[in-house]
Amino acid sequence: PSGFEPFPPQAEFPDCAPLQSWGRQLGLINGTNGGDKRGWCCSQDAIEYFSCAATRNNTIWRVTSITIVNAELAGILPESLSRLTELLRLDLRCNQLQGTIAPSWSRLVKLKTLALFSNQIEGSLPASLSELTQLTSLLVQMNKLSGSLSGNLSFLTKLTHLSVHTNRLSGTIPVALS
Image: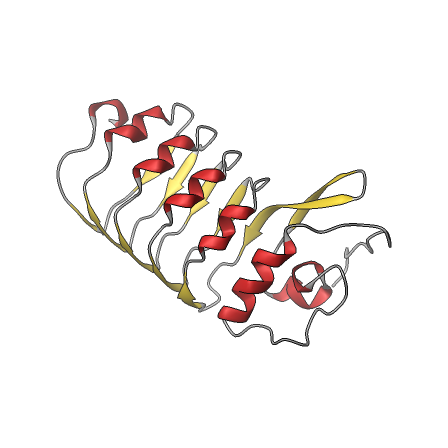
């Protein structure tokens, strides 16, 4: 693809391990792909699946954005994404992803956009999401989420877009969110 920038030979990619693990789980890669130190997530092969923007601090490159939209991905939402602590945007909308939103995703404290709508995600929205204080968009509509919205979400003072319709949620919207 055009615009693929070669990385300096001394570059380090600490965020590749969680993405490689998830890529294997989804069957997108096998044990032989991405054998160089960049890892599969930072190779040209991954551009097809992951749109990863990275920021450079000297020679350390960190993943700041993942966009996999309408790719018919089927699998479990990986807890390992919580290790991508520089992530600003996670957009996995319009796939067939299952499982729950891991409470450990609260480690993504720089996250501004979480778009998981139109999947098959179950369980409740973890109260720990209230720790994502930079979040401006939480888009989880058209899933199988259940339970009620936590009043803790009122701690998301930068939240401007909240969409939870077409789930199995019950109860009322916390006053602070209305």
